[in-house]
Image 1: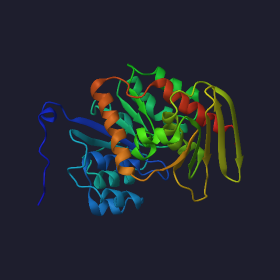
Image 2: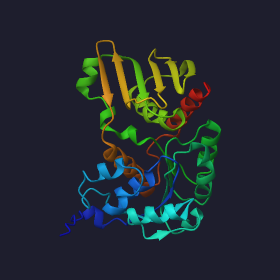
Image 3: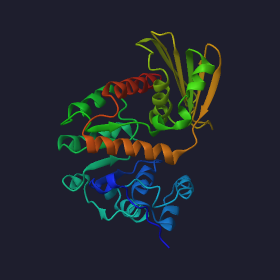
Image 4: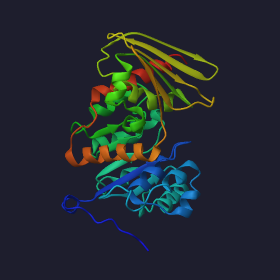
Amino acid sequence: MTHLRKPCRMETQMKTIRLGVIGLSPGNGHPYSWSAICNGYDHLEMERCGFPVIPRYLEKQRFPEDRIPLVEVSHVWAQDAHIANHIAKAALIPNVSEDPTDMIGAVDGVLLARDDGENHLHYALPFLEAGVPIYVDKPLALSRRDAETMYAAQHYAGQLFSCSALRYANEFMLSHDDHLHLGTIRAIHAMTPKSWDKYSVHVIEPALNLIPDRGAILTSNAWANNGTQTLSVVYESGVQLHVHAAGDIAAPLSIRVIGTSGWKDLSFRDTFSAFKSALEAFIQSVRERRPVIEESFTLEVVDLIEAGRESN
């Protein structure tokens, strides 16, 4: 028996947002997971997606209750038609596009669900120039130059949305009691597995949110060693930020916050909730046609990613 969630009055007054999704970059299953969060999914086909973690966290949810209401991923494109067709089957997407730009005029927004930042400008520019809102997967870019080019192509502020979904992770936020325990934050030590280019953003973005009064950068140093990369920054406020990407070494997605009177370790766990919150923020920006993340903040994130790459 299928149980349908009864829409609230506000939902019945809003139109359904139609989204297109673009994939797939190596090692990144976001076209599957993001689309499933919007559409629901076929259990058998999702088991065949090639990313075992995705069906495991999806099966912990209740569908259709836990999908995002009034949103449908209606179109998908991938560089390989076989991949695109499987994403469509797994995430219940009705249309497979022959070219990504075929979505222009057919959707209200686009999910660029690829994490190869060096290619984001290429894929995003046609949609920005056409006035289509677009969510560019993390990181927005690997250089400020590419990021500024994308922002400059916007028809309106807020057309371009980009973030690590971990900026919305409750696990990476501090409560009032946490702040009382920590005192003044003096340093943040953040660690991520895998590559600097694709994963450092996952801890840089939530770390910056923990130190809003950091001021400008005074010093910045980056170094690489045996496949790992580290960036160390000191800000005008005196707070220090240390970010380490562990490469192939097994490592947690974690942030240690050190204050004048204590410290606290934060560890990421709930992928579904973070992804859903990020998608909801993008959908809000589509409906309201305004930015929900300041351009200056995202450019600062890109600057830190670029600074860390200088160790290569």
